[in-house]
Image (tube, rainbow, N blue to C red):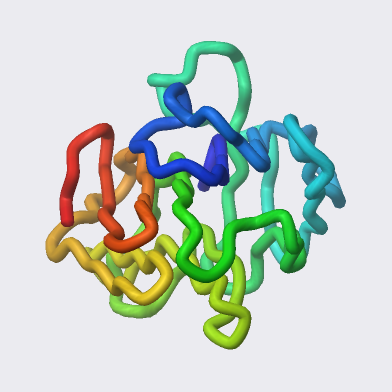
Length: 173
């Protein structure tokens, strides 16, 4: 599940420092929601598969917003591939709150956008207990990262030359 998802064009490690946010999705919509609204801009997403809204989020967020739970196989939100998102070697930060219900082997995306062919391949995800991230051409991983039921604030940050993954404010790779 995720509570917030934020994309911006500066390379920072947390949402509070992001000076040029392009999108912010709380994923706190009511149960039965078919569209997820961008809190800052105009990039809305369409709910696909099994996504359950109005779920308990991390205790670190105390403003009453809820989380969304994804079923791990069919559930996702499609935001399309808007031109306003960073591409090529533009600096960016992509942050999300996430927790997992399983550490079984198998690829699971937390958030991603773009494609390799459009030079927008940006990704946060997992396979078993390993956290994975991609920033432009930098592939990153953090072994033995995930524990079941633990919320983490994650950011993949790219400064125009190098990418890093941050977890709960600490650089991991």
